[in-house]
Length: 392
Image 1 (spheres, rainbow, N blue to C red):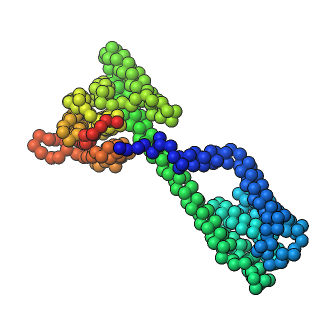
Image 2 (image 1 turned 90 degrees about the horizontal axis):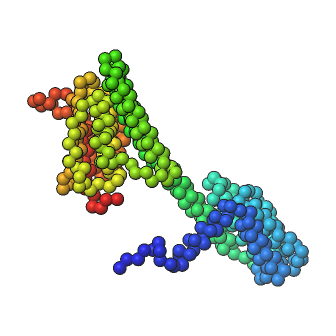
Image 3 (image 1 turned 180 degrees about the vertical axis):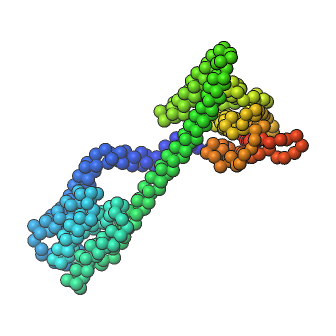
């Protein structure tokens, strides 16, 4: 029996929620967190100073109370600016810590130097940690020279500073990783939208161009055919606008479905109206098991292949679209009878088709028709998509 951890209550879930709320509050009102932390640390330092707890580690327990209180404030109040000016705050705390160790107070508030060390590791270049190391070491060295006998061990302080720096580096690395993931996701989305725009605009403009050319020649001899061409141009233009709205609607969470196998006949009919004779056999439309994304891939491959035929095959070319479904998946073949002149497989459109196929573990081959008896010249695009266990 499996349990959904996303819906199972537990301590980790509540801790994550609490941390998320704290981060949201910090992002919205950073001064609240700065003031709260500074007040808490200042209060603890003053309680230690006023209660005399500092004398348990002091080298000179007879120091006046006013000096201890002043040093406690000097070691805590600057922490309010630790995020904006961590190096300056560490320098101020170091000055107070130097007085604390050279006078023999050895206040435990000196541990608070670890706070700006964390922020230096988090927000400053790595070389800034070298200067921070010199600053935190100065009071330790001064105390050891001033009171060589009976000086508290420096190991706990050094470990505290080292752990603070390591924590800052770790948090910084996580933030950079998340930022990199966001950049990669944004780049992938831009590439996907650019691919969609290329397919939509390239195909529909080619169809419109073909219709406009045909209408111009028909205008002198057959005005009725010219009017039909104008109607087809309007229909194709509206279809292009609709598809563009679908793509751009992704940015506003539009749920309009993308074209799929059911739209292939209308796509092919539009190409025929533009002047390219197309024969089609679309056996895989009925009873297919492709997901919505895979259907869009098949549609775009047919669209791009026919667009390339209209652009590059030359006059008198024809095209054939065959879509077959079998136990292993779906196979699409688009061929034309035009003149294959040069490698077209390096273009943006064909590259986009290969990327689409790879997303669904498919393969796409583009190239001239193989030589053979009666084969002639021409171009062939073959797409294979494996059968999916469960449609998405």
